[in-house]
Length: 169
Image (tube, rainbow, N blue to C red; front, side, top):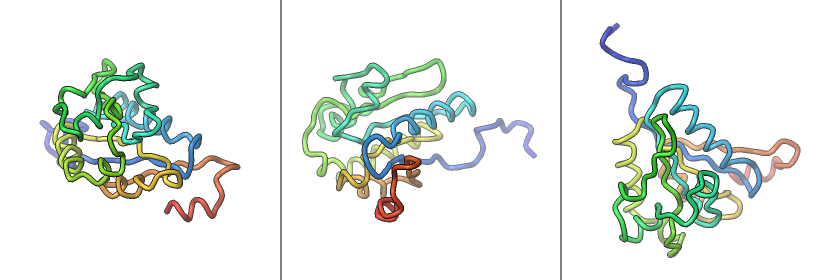
């Protein structure tokens, strides 16, 4: 054991974790926010929570960051990532909203610039939690999910069907 090593600062590589669900209202944004907050507060990890659901803008709304610059503004070349990263707590957590420049969500999801942005966020954080669109409601969700190291699928008890879950997976 290395006595100089501290918890949370070992040799693990940073992770980008996507959170999706089959449809709207399944609780994916709530889970993404709770995961990011828990990693930041409970494990004292540097975390960035990213809203990649360009249709709902739920993260910005939940953190009182409506109509502020975010991911779409970076992907459309208007601003650098640092200009759209908002510190939201005393913990080590930042938020990147979906942004104000709607552009073409499909083009943004396929953008190689997005891959570079996620890698840059991983270099600056231990975790990047990405709120993805609802998979059965957006053709962009699978494209965005491929840019993550892992994806959590949130289902709603008593509502999500086995068929919908199989389609998502």
